[in-house]
Image (cartoon, rainbow, N blue to C red):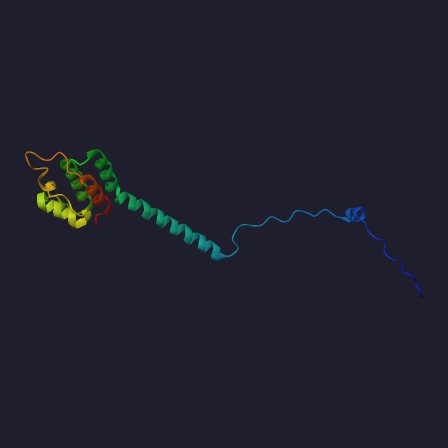
Length: 153
């Protein structure tokens, strides 16, 4: 019973290459969520995106008067009469009519200062009502722009 085993033949590269078999393509991966948690997460994310979009457009529509006033101020320069008209329209859009419509002179200037304009030149009070109004008040346009951008609602 003594059989002699023959040692295995050494394999070389061509023999190994001949023994190779073609590997098939893997099954495609299913990208659909397999649990309800992923579907719930997708629904919550979609809802949050809708809410954020609604709030963005609501905010944009609520501040349309600011953009319009800033465009008008670009053309007005430092003319106190034109700037006062623009600020009055913006204030009527931002605040209740009964609080803004009857303001003029010192009360109008004080209302602008208290709602965010900072200091406004006292010449602004009478610019729209005097016989010889100043044609320009230096820095008035910059102050008006500041008020339009930063006034408190």
